[in-house]
Amino acid sequence: MRIRNKNFDIKQIAESGQCFRMDPISENKHSLIAFDRYIELEQVEEDLIDISCSKTDYEFIWKDYFDLDFDYGSIVGKLNSDSDEFLKAASSFGRGIRILRQDPFETLISFIISQNKNIPSIKVCIERICETYGNRMKDNKSGRDYYTFPTPIVLAEAKKEDLRALKLGYRDEYIIGAARAVAVGDIDLNALKICSHDEAVKALKSIKGIGDKVANCISLFGLHHIEAFPIDVWMKRVLSEYYQDKFDPEKYSGYAGIVQQYMFYYIRHIHGVSN
Image (cartoon, rainbow, N blue to C red; front, top):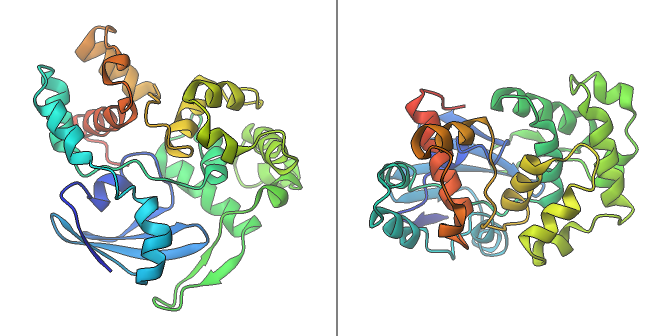
């Protein structure tokens, strides 16, 4: 399936810190495991992507996953007409980033794991969890074996010592607690998708081990509340160095999360970090 879109860059999305199971195969090609499926994506041209999926799967899964009905070009255009020089540069540089519509539970667990870890370490931990608690599958087209992300019920029954053996450290308790909250219905992630961002953050922070930053990441990347504005160490650097801590996300109400992604991706590029 080939998609033409001026604001769809696989490498930029893979390096934007929102998804941990999108990996490079070659310079212009990446693999992705999501929703129990494996696909490969190739950047054929600057605005042309090849997705190894059927038309049916594209229409029912991947079109929504990559948020392809949303006009990111309009956001880039707004930011380029603004007087904010840093945002002009950041949005132009990262114009191929899109906010993925990921599985909420996978995002919840992934960002609990993300605390005090760099992206390569997060990816390793997630793969260990999938290999231990997920289902082994084979993609018929590529012939590749892969593992699905475990369900809430399976992770809820995991033992702390087994998770600790996967090098998750203190996060083992938080992972089990979050999985149990979802499995028994104390947290309804689908309901959080349709409530307000503030309500979602409040509910997520009721789970032990989830603070403001992680809750905002889950809200943005798992619930698709694109008004969320997560602040990690990279964003603190942006806000301090370029805005003297006076940046107001409310100026970009309704799409502050997209602005955050452009900032995050660009500041890491400035400092020579891509993973």
